[in-house]
Length: 276
Image (tube, rainbow, N blue to C red; front, side, top):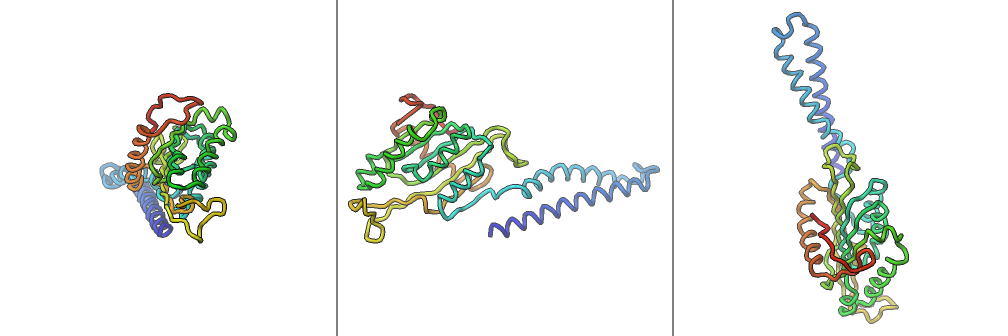
């Protein structure tokens, strides 16, 4: 469906550009052939030239935008594939800020590293391991603890200075990543100065049974999944982005107020709002 829609948009854009160029050439040729007294005898041609130039100027950016850009809304069948796409998309472009809402962030650790390498100031909201323990999700408790150890051992100290981590005690519900690219880095013709991207998915909880019990965590009561559930990616300026960002902002603001600050440049400190 997305490919078909894209083909239609591309065909329409090319047709519009072709009509505009043909009209312009016809008007210029017609005007030159009757140059003597052209303004008096060819007022319509003059008007067509002006309108054609205006049309070409106003439509060319949109045409180039459609022909050279990615889709503005993508749905992946698994979060891991969405993470990989974002890692590739931001590489070498520079990122200004990023906010992540995750459970353990273990499945998104490569993306976290990629954001920090691109110079982003990152705020990460992750599940408090005490909540996982209270829900008898001991595997998740260990994953959260392991991720916290990795903050010190696997992330460059300079990059670590740009990472702020909160731990929230409410059970995880959504998996989200909001990214603001650096100024002037977008290649899209009609993109605003600061390009914003939002990736959104969710977490599912399942009862443990013989089909999904892990040998090392036989006492777990629930299994959480996030890496293998569908995930969306939307760009600023789309209706999908406008709809999804409301939920993301609501949860991020709530966690910012109520969650426990885990680290800020190596020590506890007051943190300014990450989202506008």
